[in-house]
Length: 500
Image (cartoon, rainbow, N blue to C red; front, top):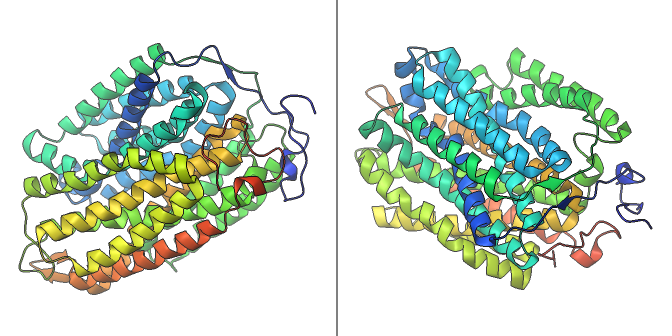
C-alpha cells in the first residue's frame, strides 16, 4: 500500500475508499511546546468568551438597542447560526490549507466583529458583529488539530486536556464577567477587551506557530452551499421553537426545508473527491457515538452553569433563590470556572493512563453523581458553588476525552474537520439545552411584579434530567470500540490517546 492511502473496509465507510488523502506535514515542530499550548489555550478562552459574553445580558438588549425582546433575541441566534455554518467549512479548510492560516483569519473576523459592536449602537451592525464573533466557534477544533501536528506526541494529551478545560473555564467565566463589566465599565468595554486580546493572539499565532505545507485540493463550494441551506433552518428551529411555537407553520416549514436539504447534500457529498465533510468518517462507531455523547454533555454542562448563576442571583423571597448581587454572583461563579481549568492536568494524566473512552465514562458518571449532589445541596451559597464545581470537574474530564477519541479514530488529514463536527454537535446540545430550560421554566416559574423567576422545582427537575442525560452518555460511551477493534487503516499512527 502506498503512503497516504487508506484501505477499503466494510463498516459503511465506502466514501473513504480510493480517495486521495493529503499527507500533512509541517516545516518544523514547535520550538517551545509550552508556549504553543499557552497561546492556543488563550485562543480557546477568547472563543468561549465570544460566545457567552452576551448570554446573561439578553434581558438588557432591548433597552440597549431600542428594539423588542423578540428582535433582540436575534443577536444570540445570529451568533449560533454563524458558528454552526462556519465550523464545518473552516475546519475543512484548515485540513486543506493549514490550521495557522485559518486561526488567524478567524481571529481577525472576531476582532472586526468586536469593533463593530464597540463603536456602533446600530442593531443591524450588532447582528453583523455578533455573526463575525460567532465564527470563532471554529477556533477550538482547529487549534486542537494544530496541537496534534506541532506538539511532541507525549504533550498532545496534556495540551488538548488543558484547552478543553480552558474552553469550559471561558464559558463559565463569561457569564458573570459580562454582568460585572456591563455594570462597572459599560457596554462597550465587553467588546474593546475582546478586540484587543483577539488582535494580540492573531499576531502571536502567526509569528510563533509553524507553517504547514499542504497539497492543494479543490473546495466543494456547492456542498458548502447545500450544508448552509440545511443547517440554517435547523438552527432556527432549535432557537426559535419556543418563540414561534414548535407546531407552528414556520417551524414545521423550516424543519422540512432542513430535511430536504440534508437529503440532497448527503448523496452529493458521497460523490465528491474532496467533500466538505467526509461522511464516511461520521458513520464510524467511535466518531458517531462520541458526537451523540457531545450533544448530551453540552446540554448538561450549560444547565449547570446557567442555573447556578440563577440560584445565586434570584431574590430570596423566591423559593430556591439566594439573593446575591451581580458582583457577588460573579465572584462565586469564578470557582466553577477555576475548577474546570484546575482539573485539566488531572484529565491529561487520566487520558494517558486509561485512554479517552474510560475517561469519558468516568466524566459522565461523575457529572451524574454531582447532579444528585446539586439536588441535595442547594440551601446555601457554599452548597450551590460546591455542586457547580463538582459538575464542572466531570465536564472537564468529558470535554478533554472527546477530541482524543476522535483524533485516535480518524486519519490525521481529517483531524480538524472531524473535531469540527464534534464541536457542531456540542453547539447543538447547548441550543437544545436552552430550549429545554425555557420549556421547564415556563410551567414551574413564579411571577412577581411582572418578572418571571425559576423556583426550586425548576432547578430540581432540570438537575434530575441531567442525571439521566449523564448516565445515558456513560452508557453510550461504553459502546465505543477499543482502538484495537477499529478497522485497519483508520487508526492514526500518531494517536496519543488510545480508546481502550
